Length: 370
Image 1 (tube, helix red, strand yellow):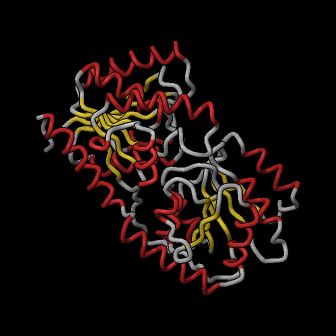
Image 2 (cartoon, one colour):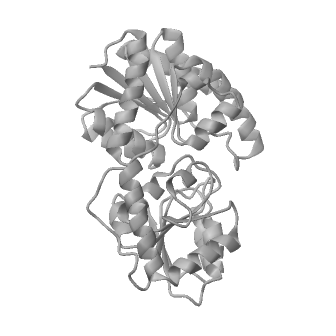
Image 3 (cartoon, rainbow, N blue to C red):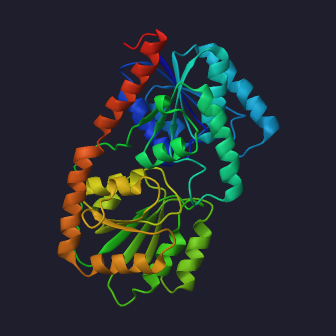
């Protein structure tokens, strides 16, 4: 079977890591190709080439909506489909998902789209939500299956009539196992947040919450890059936290960073099902996270960690204080999170369920799956 994966950007991010794990997992089961836009030397491109995957740069597949360039992008995607003749296209990210499904439908190619959190979810600016909803309703009629990474996103899609129930599947994200484990009970506690400095995330909320906990011993590691990094650095200085906060940049050793921490935090405006939370649970860390998207399907309130409302600075400060002052609570929640990972969020389960979606699409269409 010949599979083509499409994604708009190659930069480090949850969707890109997800695609990379699919490439690694299915490399021996199918002929794999990757179509990616914007960046000739991004993280995903480098990793795919190292695996021996055929990488195809789509120069017109851009992140912002630009009608003229998007028409060229559609033509470019269609040309790639004609050249490769894949049995199935699996698209990721909104722009690649829209153009990929449109081109695949026009050429009679089966397609699957994974929504890594809908762009019309709560917390997204209203103008963007309306445009995203219109595009997803059209694209939902064109593709063969849509994978939602959380039940929250499944229900949101059905409520807004983006895709029919018959075409929609839920496949929770999964992350690969690692032998590295954290020691949540260790003192003094180190907090860590792994996230791009971009609009969906709320680093400012975390910094303001911690500014009210100066009397407690803690340090914070922030892993990631992005356009809002300078603003976060300036805020840390303005709050007098510069000596307690480390900005580590993009890291390829996230598992090692997590193993050195005692508490994981994710402050955010909107999400699908963030890999960083699953990686923290895998490491045995308690998690404090904003209750948006599918986060509550991974983090069990009061058991594996705590959930707080979007923008709730007081609530976030209170939950962090509980964990910072209670090593035994950190340890018990970390153990529960590790068990939750083993039960529901392994990479093996995600690969198995994703391959079943492929089989469902291709068997019904009469194409080979072996």
